[in-house]
Length: 415
Image 1 (cartoon, rainbow, N blue to C red):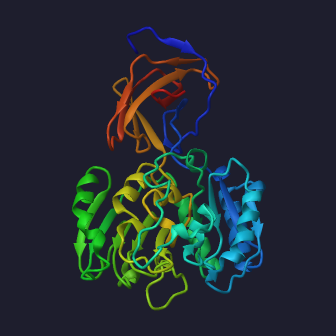
Image 2 (image 1 turned 45 degrees about the vertical axis):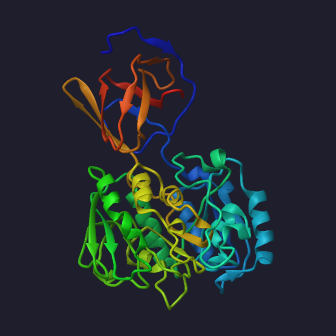
Image 3 (image 1 turned 120 degrees about the vertical axis):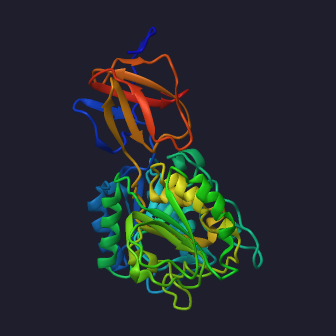
């Protein structure tokens, strides 16, 4: 028990409770919000595309999205590209139909995947603007306000709603993708991140940072560097980052719950392309999320996911859509695909050890926290006088055992 005077107050604010994996009977832990909820995601469905409608219906049911979060539009679906003129009224319709509380979008199609020089996901998030595309060959583009953003309210905080396409060539593939994304939630998967350095010099530019990334992930996510054309005969893949026109041996790999994989190349975002491997091949192989560019980006690192940032955010309990978006500095030309709400590293477990609670969670960012306690869900809550300091990549956090009841952790300075 805390050896100091306790300040008694009633806390009227609410927080999203992390997905619990296990806790002693009668003990409830409320952590700061770490990822988007289904209520904050709007689903954009193309009523002119039967597959889009089928995917949307299944996803709404599977993720229990409210009806007000479903936005209906009609657009051509048998080609990969829309013109800015075609896109403008669609974007206006979506903007008008989006409830203010919505923080992100999910699209339910693979085609079209671009609006002129922009990806379809970036176009819905930012609106069409050539500033998000290269002014000349190999030029950088406008940086995203969501780059390195580690909050969980992108629209409220940065005035951007990130988008991701639940892309598939048929409903069977879409259902598998959705099911494994949902099944991954809160599983705390044990697996490996593979950083593949390939002989393709132009596409291997991310490899210069692999050593630093591996060091940063020590004790957080098991990370292995490899060299060659690709890994094969592995059954523990959580992350796979490489650079190549086509990635071999995909049929020999098994991807873990919520796995992420992408390859740095020019046209991975051409989801129906043949000359280079489409990012869709990753999803068909068992990954839950991927990324690719829809026009020639050159090998500018800012136009592709930063593996270290992505692994850090996803491993901290962020959803797939949040983690992927904060890892790309210049996403205007890149499409994000996958099951947006997958959050395999969210949640917590609690154990009682030697008259102390042991909280196991990956969702607390480094910093100072306040702990409060009440025997009742509505309070009044007692605030502990001492700060709780959480370090970088700290997973195990000791808490005082105050008995059964309701425990709340808040960042210092918030309630």
